[in-house]
Image 1: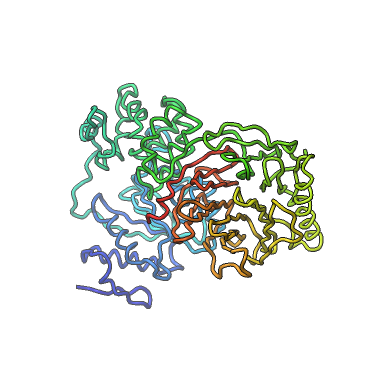
Image 2: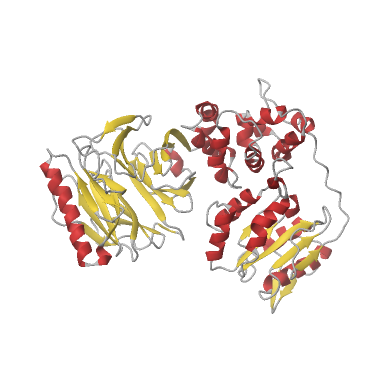
Length: 593
C-alpha cells in the first residue's frame, strides 16, 4: 500500500487522507501535481462517466489539502441544482464577501489579492427551474460566472464536468476517469412517485420535515415537468412546510419565473430572503425564521402560517415597518417602550416597541432637523432633545426652546468637537453612539481612533476619552451595568471591535472581534443574562456577543444594516434603507453554545 505522494519537491504522507483505490490514486496524483504547479494551467477539468469516481476524487483532494501551502482550497461549491445567481451567492459566502450577485461577485474577486483555488463539483448538473429558461441550463452558470472568473489571473479552478463539453479552453489540464465500472445514474422519478414517499401528518398533509432528502431536492423540478396546468407546482408553493424544507435553490429559480402564479406576495418575500435561504449551513428552524422575517410587514397571511415554525428558533421577527428608511435609531431615555427613528431628511419620530406603531413626533419642538441636515446617527438626551451627527461629520444639537439645560449640555459637546476638528483633521467626528436609557450617554468616535464618552444628563467640561483604535472609529455604543460599570464598545475601520471600561485608563488589550469587514452599527444592553453586544457587519452578518462568557451567535441579515438598538429584554431593532424591523432574541440561547 502506498502511503506517500510526491508533489513538486515535497513528499506528503497521505495515510490520514480518506481511503481511495489504487486506480483513483493515480488520478489524485495528477490533480495534486496540477494544484501545486502555480505556473501551469489555471483550469483543471475532471471528466468521466456517471459513478466513475469524479466527486469522490474531488472530496479526497479537498480533505487532504486543507491548510497545505499552495494547494489550499478557498471555496467548494457543489453545483447540482444551482443557477448562476445561487452559485454566486454561495461562492461569495465561502470567499468571505457574503452573498453577492454574479456581477458584484466578479467585481469583488477582481479586487481580492489572494491567489484563489476553487472546486466546482457537478457543474454538468447545474441549473434549476423551468427548462426553457436560461436559469435551467448549466451553460448559463458557465457564461455568467465561471468563464469571467477564469479570466482573472489569480483564480484557478478544478471543475467536474462529467461527459459534457462544458468549459472548453485552450490551456487546460484534463483528468479523465473514463467509463469505469459503475451503475448508471437513475433517471429522475415522476412527481406522483416522489410525492408518494413523503410521510403524512395526522391530518393528512405532507410532512416535509420527514421527507427523504432526494425528494425535497427534486420534487419541485418534477412538478415543473408535469403537465397538469400547474396544479402540482401550486400545491408546493402554497405549502409553508415545503417553503421551509424544499430545495431553496429550486424554489428561487421557480419563483423567478413570472409565468408561475404564486399566492399573496410570496415572490417578493422569497426574493428578499433568498440569498440567505440558499446557504448550506442554515437549518430548517433558521430558514423558517428568515422567511418569516421577510414576510412580516409584507405578507401577513404567510407570516401567520410561518410563525409557529419560526418561533422554534432562538430569534423571531415580531414586527416591521417597511418603506421607512432609517439611517439613525436609538432608544429614548425616560420613554419606556419607545424608540426614536430619524429618516434621511432629519425628521424624527417615535415608535412603540411592542408593535411598531407610531408614537408621535419628538416632543418640545425638536421634531425636525434643519433642512440641510442628512443624519447618520443620533444620541437622545430625552424625548425632547437629541444630539445628531450629520453626513458632513458635524454634531448638531436639536433641543426644545423651553429646556435651557439641554441646550447648554448638547451645545457644549457640539462646540467642543467642532473646535477640535478645526484644530486638526484627525479629530474630526467619524461616528456617534448612544448609551441608551441606562445612561444617557453620547459616545463620539473620531478619525484618529479616539473614543469620547459624554454624559447627557448634566454638563461636563471635557469627556472621558481614550485612544482605543489606530484607525478611524466607524461605530460606537456604551452600556451601564448593574454593578456600576460603563462599558464602551467601538469599531475601527480595520475591522476590529474593542471594549473599554470607562473607569480604566486603557481598553482591553485584544479586540473583542477582528474581521476583514467594516462594522456598520453597534448596540448594547444589560440583559438578565448580562451585557450583550450586537455588531452588524458589512458582509451581511450580525454577531451577538455575550460579554460574560465570550460566546458569539450569528444572526444573518436580509439587508444592509445602518442602525441598531437593543433593549434589556432582548428586543433587537434594526434600521436600513428599506425600513425598520424588530427581532425578539431568546437571551438564554446566548449561553447555550
